[in-house]
Image 1 (tube, rainbow, N blue to C red):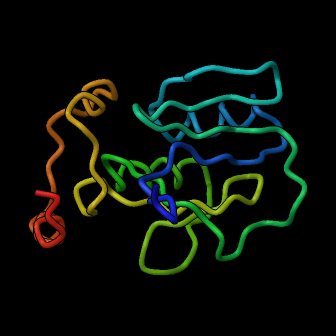
Image 2 (cartoon, helix red, strand yellow):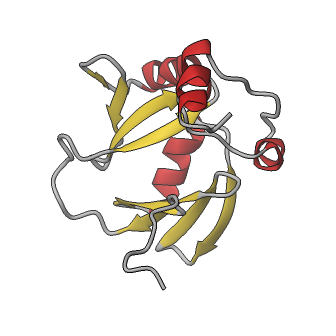
Length: 147
């Protein structure tokens, strides 16, 4: 038996929002996603293949400054355009960060630019099969033995 457990990934992230239906509507105007399920009006689950985001009613704290989570998309420019059309302020900095209406800070990264990878089956399920990686991301992955 090991003395410590090995960190192997993230199953889901939970976001607290004021209203689950409003949050699903907001994120639905920004992203193409499938709803994995709901628990009444208090919780919903946005599917990401082998992972998910839990949306939970009951946001009480102030907006997040540096605490955030990284959301991986196939097309960051498309999301930037959707954010601009919705009038969502894109936060200053080198990336694509924004606050949702409940103060959750979201940092957007594009799939082909990072080491994060999904199985071919998960990509097929999400309808984005065949996504590749940039040369830089491939080199970083190769260096870690991931390719």
